[in-house]
Structure formats: structure tokens, C-alpha cells
Image 1 (cartoon, rainbow, N blue to C red):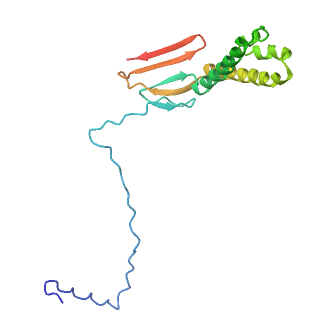
Image 2 (cartoon, rainbow, N blue to C red; image 1 turned 120 degrees about the vertical axis):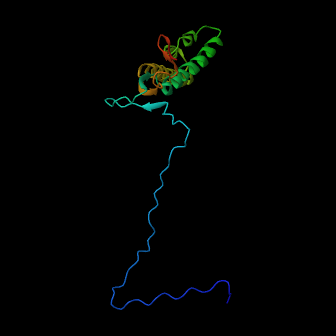
Image 3 (tube, rainbow, N blue to C red; image 1 turned 60 degrees about the horizontal axis):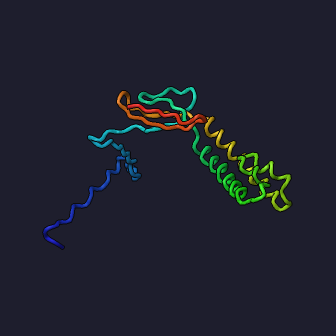
Length: 173
């Protein structure tokens, strides 16, 4: 036995007249409260979804924007097949494919005069162009509403939204 660390005395014997005490051995729940860092400003979200009828939080402004997820792929689906059709028309020396220079309608105008093997590609070309122009128009006309944080009176904001007639520019300094 080590002389520097004496053994503790044994616990006293329980009193036979007293009811036994049951001690709960389950650990207490731990609650963690996260405090914001001192000196660091909490910035609100730049953009929030908007649901009709809900109040607009202070510092935010309701904004409408086109749907680039529709109009950008729509523009690609219109321009790429049309460019391929126009390239095919420019390679034709007899002028039989000149209708392909017309976007959307060109493939349908050319189908009657085309050979049997060319009808299916022309039909697919025309349908892809129709889908592209439809997506392009819907993406520009169906606006999505959302809330933009303007920072009270000193928020800076800039937006460029394409429209059918050009581009809508919006800025606040």
C-alpha cells in the first residue's frame, strides 16, 4: 500500500429503519444554446420564397422575375436545330431547302417535298423548335415572385431581366 494515498473509509451501514433510497442513474439531458458570435452582424437571407397572402418582412421587397430555367433551354432548343436546318439549306444548290431558313415553320413547309428518309428528321426538327419557342415564351411571361432583401434604406440591388421587348433593368443604391 502507498503511504501517500490512504484508502477512504468504508461507507456507513444503511439504517434498517429507513426506506432504501433509489438513485436514478440516467444521464441528464444536455441542452446546447448556440449564441451568435460577438461583433459579427447576422445578415438576412438575400432572397426568400414568397407565398401569396403572407406579410412581407421588414427590409424585403416583393420582386417578379422571369424563369431562366425555362427560357434559356427554350432558346437553345430553338436556335440549335434552326442553325442546323439553315446550314443544310445553305448547302443545297437547287433552292429546294430554302424554307429551312424560316425558324419553326421551315421544317414543316419542307416535309412535303422531302424524300422519305428525310421526313422523320424534319418532323423532329420542327417539333423541337416548337417546344423551344414555347419554353422561351413561357419562361419570359410566367414570372416568379420572391422577396429580395433591400437592407432597409441603404441596401444595394441590381437586376437585369430579359423581356419580350428587350431587357428590364432595375437598380437601387
